[in-house]
Image 1 (spheres, helix red, strand yellow):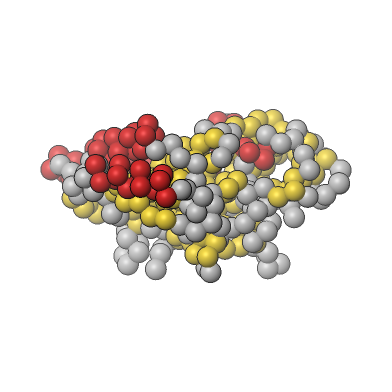
Image 2 (image 1 turned 180 degrees about the vertical axis):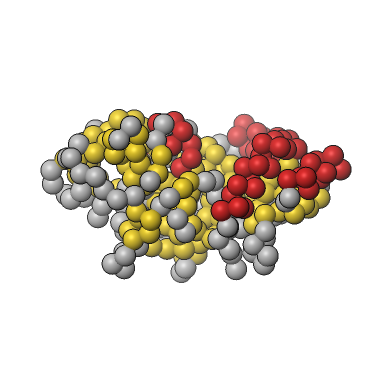
Length: 319
């Protein structure tokens, strides 16, 4: 089971990050208690963490050791169809290799993992990691269909944020295939990041809500970074609303047309056309849907771009 953090848990996570920085090996949400757990490797860091009010757990590997493991993967295992990120619950770097990764490359990954003395766990996953854009719903541009994530505002103007690999495709976006333009691209970033922003130019003032695809919507009132172990929902124009759990942060995904960094991995299901959709928990905006390796039954691998980074880059806020 996974839990949705109380607003205080997001605030505590931010407080811990400020107080400990690299002295913590990561935080996660305890599914049973709903409390934020801070991992540390030293007595000094444990003392600092307890001073914030967080639950503390001593682990074997520091943030520096996990970062070094990911640096090794970055240097030696830049293989299309792989992703890796930190799972603080296991205190390891969790590597996923999709079905396109050859047996030879899989052996290379496993050899690197063995050399890193248990800091890296390698798993094969079904499907292939793809940016989930469809030709042909939600927002349309450049002959493709994507999904909008969140409506945002700055100085009274209204915008929406979506995936950067979507906004790379077109400057003009419509709400229906072949329909009139409702917004114009004002920024895009992909690869490395995966976010973009479109300004509404049709005179509309859309609500700051997410479509739940059941005749109702969810009001979004704040934004935060996702916490490993928490429950999330994803809303996109293909698979509609799906649910999952956050399994890793600081994730690198090696797409065929370039890598993206500092992403978040979840177990939500998704498919083509969901790109740019919303990842959220309750009224909190968490991420912009990027892609996945597909969905097996009810278990997926949806990847999101943390929305806080996009909001900061463009100086906008959710409402």
